[in-house]
Picture (cartoon, rainbow, N blue to C red):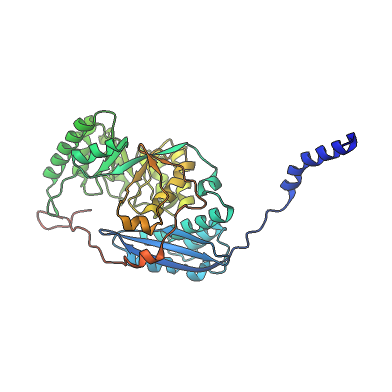
Length: 403
């Protein structure tokens, strides 16, 4: 090769990246052709999945599972069929804005869970089309692995088992309710006693999360939270109801125990005051209800802005878990993730073996294109929807108690 040829060859190689950068991106030419739902009974809960179909055979899977309203949610998801068919599934923000704003009625658990299910499925399609995990399309990793806390029973044995499995944190309810009867003094006293037993068993360095689950009156919440301060829980979750943020602010002033909430809040708007007023130490959006993957990422940015940590809520299926992990992977504020593993063989079949990889209490970053999991429709059909009744808590006078 002579000197001139060498220089031309070298110059061509050097300019190749510049030429590539000025070329238009290859169009994906994807169009939505159909939208279906699958409601799967998993014992005490029903899971609600959305599946978006495209003209090129790519499908996307999402979840919006919400207790007590699964059949209604399924229909709410299908209400988006006429809006979505014919549109580009990769225009995720545009389609989210349309689903949220065009119908005029906004917000609430049903409407937001329906949007969430569809939005997760759209991200699944985009990741598959580009051959990369979703979190890589949202800025890439903010961490090497994702810390988990496991949902367990409130017994010492359940917490010790979680610790033996490698987890460094676990969560339970602790608030004692027998035969659906709420006796405030007993519920608080027994909850504190149980927590003390667990703390002594697991030691000082294992994190204990407490899910009050909205059961407490204001008086009960203050009593419980102040009593457990010395037992150092990682947080007390949903110690108050959502109707009045003043109640949460009052509790915040009365106790130094870390507080958490958010599983029944929706979109960035629902989390703005939690963060800006520092009403809690942990926000807990649920990717199936808060608006989907990108909306939960936005909530994480809010949390990061105000130095509030994010601990996403996730008692649902592996679809919800993976959607959460993609957000966790790319969100600095997201420091611990709820995990509720199910070991039944048929559930493994439902998700074709699954894709969540856990070791020593941490989840690996997702490594498959898109969401990373598929739904076996035949297995889903063998476990159809069955109505599930939640407990009906009452006080001793017969009045309705929160749950």
